[in-house]
Image 1 (cartoon, rainbow, N blue to C red):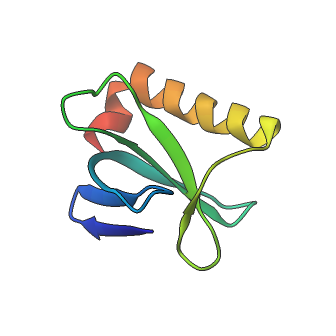
Image 2: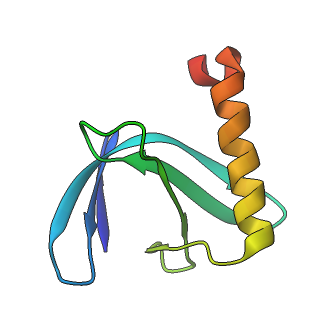
Length: 87
């Protein structure tokens, strides 16, 4: 489960413990009609986590290799293009 507060998100793990995370960016994949969020734990911006929203608006892990490769491509483009970061 997650709650969003501006650029932060609270993630509840499988043990019920809540973690406050910082949202790096989000994007939508129009063909899949899926939204993704990239976030990290404050103090650890080098450890980016990407997850997708399911139809109920809940976060779930990306398990499909092809989908993960596309998400990784988006993340790399974000890091390489300063105009994307400023948008």
